[in-house]
Image 1 (cartoon, rainbow, N blue to C red):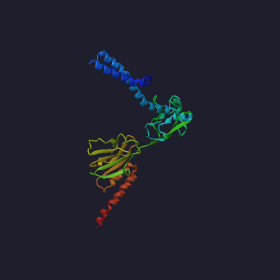
Image 2: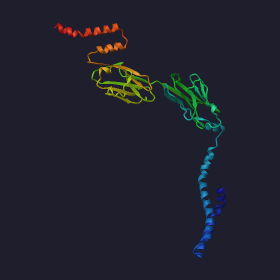
Image 3: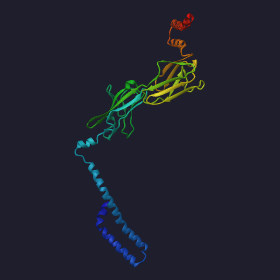
Image 4: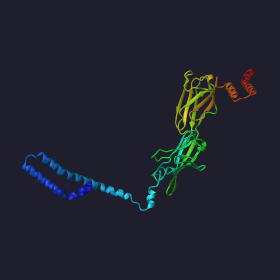
Length: 336
């Protein structure tokens, strides 16, 4: 309205300013000082033209932008209009999600331009393995309580949550959106991984008394590093063993977490089963034998046979055989 009014008075703008300049000169020549009433009157006369000039200039700057906005609202045909306003996925490619066994999986499906014409019941999650409809809208259609859909009002994200994932949950899941032209789909591949732990070695480790026991445990196939790695000697946790002393544990988290157990000045009491137990894996074990001298393998071998469940006869035969073999050097010396 202000622009229209200013447009009408714009041609008279120059005439008004000329009259004002003549009036101002006459006031200066007639009186050395202008009264307060005349000054207020001059201000009232000057203000509307200045305001109109500012409004006209702003209108000239905004005119091209308004014209481009109106042009963007026109479509060549109805199909183009429908295509431009159909729901679209935020990510049209196949998504891959990796979750550790027993964790929670979150499969995201972000739909834009959903609008009011697409009701929530037209968005569904389908398990492709058996074509089972898991959810439709906010409703769940499975007896497995581990499945549910997460959606906040006004959000464009429809997330399928799977709690305590199992190996059988591995596979492809499809997010379906019903539109005026058919069904749109977004696929998510869910990979379930089982972290593994193992201790370097062949199941047993031999050291001499007074030497250092060094064991390395590796945790792999884990999406995230374990929260902790504990070491046990038999059934006793030794990470923070201050009574024994000389024990240290160094853990380096990463795609393959390495945990190293160091026991200095080994004693025969340090022999036994050592277990590496991480927060997200099954434990791994190794048996350590601490011998009096490196050549004396008889005590270690007997302990190994005992742990493996060998019979008394087997143990006796093994001991006699070793004693007979060890006696050969003595017999040779006696013959000389």
